[in-house]
Length: 284
Image (cartoon, rainbow, N blue to C red; front, side):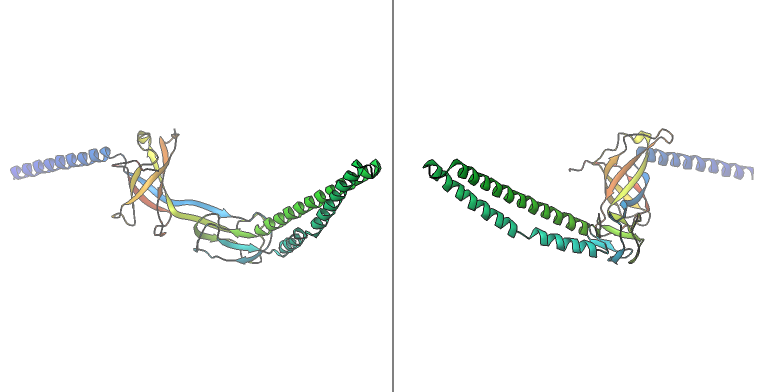
């Protein structure tokens, strides 16, 4: 009986040694792959869209969860005053009759001055008549320049009125997804955001790395990312930013990567694992 107990104890000790060696080997292998780390996938950019001018919302063209393109119309403010200003400025800018009249007048006095000059050479007119002809020509020229300046001012006023009208339309600054809609038609936009948008292509992969990894990961390198929802599907991300400063308190620094997501198949906020094994430079 004692012999059986002895054999069982011996077997248990051997098993413990075997498993300890195996765990140690696993630990060594994990140390040989220092690039394997936890990460999180976030939207590349999250922004709140506001209006550059105050006003009342007239129309909203999108809803929460809608995909939008950069430059797409999201909403419009009430703009009857601005539309009237544009129409008035256009009418002023198109009034060129005065310019034509002043140009004809200038040409007339210029021709008269030349004729008087010839007559003066032949002593057919007095110096007073010659000076009067020159003065009339100069006055006509200045009048023509004045109406030209007024025309340019009218054109600038039109551009300003059109710019003011353009500000009444709120457009998306990025291509992404509407994640919040804060206001509806009839509400004031004063000092309030209208929408919150998230850019989901590409996505941003964020890694908090230990100090020993500093200098081993460089912008342009590729990494393999596996999400917790689909760990069997490797995804390729590219290093964009490596923080140049290490946080002294935690002994860590940030790494940010871009992960293509053209179909928006991946949401932001996923936890993931990232592996920097077999890194290679990516041509830019």
